[in-house]
Image 1 (cartoon, one colour):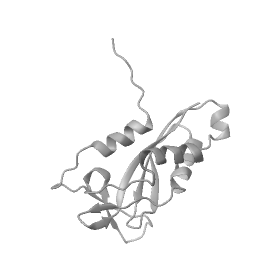
Image 2 (spheres, rainbow, N blue to C red):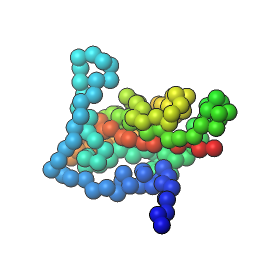
Image 3 (cartoon, one colour):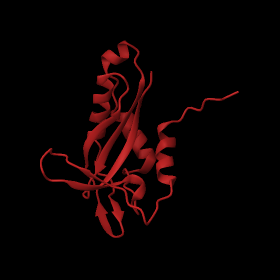
Image 4 (tube, helix red, strand yellow):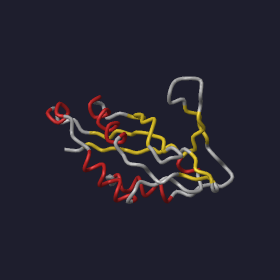
Length: 146
């Protein structure tokens, strides 16, 4: 018999923090946030020496999301639930930018709400490689449950 386990946001964030980083391998992607010719190197969350962190840590992040997330009325009325998987970049100054939906919840209003909540986040502590602050891509799920 197979048991289903419900994985919450705190487990996902904790898992991201516990995963080992590899010092020799650096996963760097290129992002064009302004859709112009300038590009920026962005490090993946698991491949930096010091990972960016929300003020207040994991508990602070969960409290922020729960405080600022508002269920869209139409989705609530239609009883639509789901999880929106988003990515964003924590810049060298700690600001959140380039918020995108990786996998939506099936309703555009839930996707827009997840982007709005992430865009309102305060500055994070910066990610570092060695002693240098670097931009880091973070992937975060936002759950909508009734």
